[in-house]
Image 1 (spheres, rainbow over the protein chains, first blue to last red):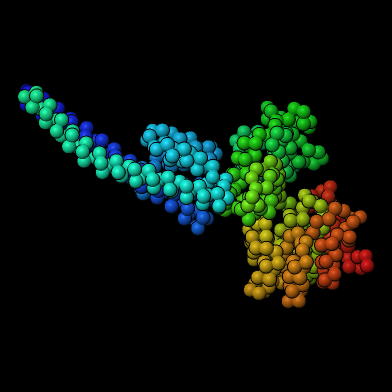
Image 2 (cartoon, one colour):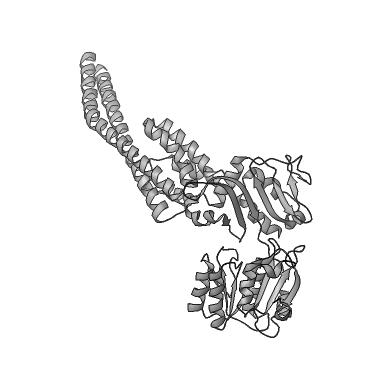
Length: 169
Length: 298
């Protein structure tokens, strides 16, 4: 019985540490996709002149942007007849809050809908450049965090699990 | 007509669209414009007098009880008309209007921004494109019965110049004026929509479109809306030189000052136009008077 308990506690510690590491990984992937989003929007809006509603529809369905759940929410609410800038603002603000995005990104993302839908080409260009730079900075920070904390966290989790298992035994 | 109205109001936000959609069809058919101004009543232009939309969705003749349009409603209408992609429609927006699906036109007023766009839109005028059955009948029977001629359609805004030109293009192209002609329409503002059996150059500047048509489409008839500039007249001259007939429209307030209008004078000075057709401002799509070349002054 004790052996089983010790094994369970050890397993739980390791699982917790791995879950934290996976969360850091997901965070990195999300910032990669946000950086990609800025580049993709820039190409589609300024070079290809694609209309925004169709663009958001295709982005929401693309597996390359699967981590950016606000795109799907945005598309769904716009299809229901609501104005695109306001549904973008709502969905992006909720996404930023739920995913605890860095303050810089959380401040820029909700307002981007207004610029994309109502801004001129120059305004869109400036907005997407600022956003891409912020996304790049956030990505570097999250990568550093993953490199520094990810491995250490698993080691600490495993160590703590073994220690607790020994204590139980 | 009511169908065109319902299509045109599709760009309005739900709060404005729903009461307008619920109006009787006979009234919808009479409305030619929907005017939105920030902080002012919503105005429906209809003969014989303007109407207003009340707060409870009824149409009222006085503006006292009228529903006030908000800045957000004007902005939402503008964005929807741009398909939420203002950057794509910048060239049109800079000219002060947007052409919507179905040929409806949204006139824009507001504050100019640094790039020449609208920093803030304060007024919108939604003009509903109408199809008037048999709009070109009189022209066909009186002017084109014996073959091609080159008329100038003149009249104030909302008198049906574009509607008649569109109907005329269709009739000349499908042979219902007596013979099938190769008709080429230069539609710089994309108001004509699709015209079966006609070659339509949509969105091109008028002078450029006229020259493109001459170079590659060998038209027998060239149609162009609202000619005003000298270079457009010069392009029409090239059309005449190539043996094509031309039908064009110009703005004119009424009969009194008709022949004093510079664009009209420029067209008359080409010596190629055969008739000036003055439209009746009181009845959209109806011909008021036709002047032959002998009746022109000077």
